[in-house]
Amino acid sequence: MDTYKAQPPAGMEPSGASNEGASIYMQIRDDIISGRLKANERLVVADLAKRLNTSTNPIREALQLLRGEGFVIISPNRGARVRPIDQNFVRDIYEIGVLIEPALTRWFVGMATHEDIAELERVQGEIEDNNFADALRHSELDTRFHTIMYERHYNRHAAELWWKHREVLRAVSRRFNFTLARRAQVMREHRDLIQHIKNGEADAAAALVAQHVEGSGRHILEHMRAAEAARAS
Image 1 (cartoon, one colour):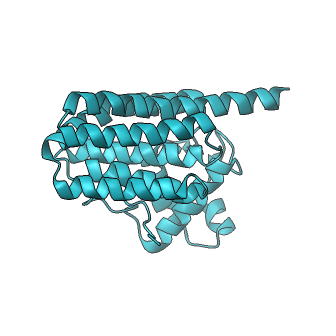
Image 2: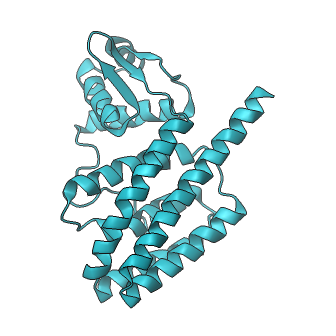
């Protein structure tokens, strides 16, 4: 069985932190995503170090990483606090993806090799074999599918921004299940995208990716609205 784990495009470290800092980063991020750390809650370095049984340096590393991904806000003289992961934040992130990913895709269509297409088809085959049964595995494979297209792009800043924003959306989407309609749409759009790449149809591939990213963002927002409505009632 493929044991692929999502990794950032080549040349970018998964976290940029020490091993301990990376571990602490994952713990704090999970606490933010799960709601154990509330929106706008202050993140005091000494308190976090005590709770997580570590020194202050890994905490500072982790907070800087989380700031870079958008989960934490650090203000002069006010310290760090949890950024609200609200609908506006998610909307802003996926709208940036709608702008960036078509450009990355258009470039890839002009550069794709037979080996690239074969790898896309292989990963898509694994996505279909999994058929959303294991949500984490689907997330990892779906990330690999898109990373194949973006990992060699010459604009490393754009690729890095895509990665950071995708990680935020991946993290938020873990709260929710895919609807049946969204599952079918993901499968169909992946297959159509591979066909556009095979045909060298850069504009069609770029337009489809924009639709794909927007659909993913709207799916998350719809779940967030439903959860908010349920809490209100």
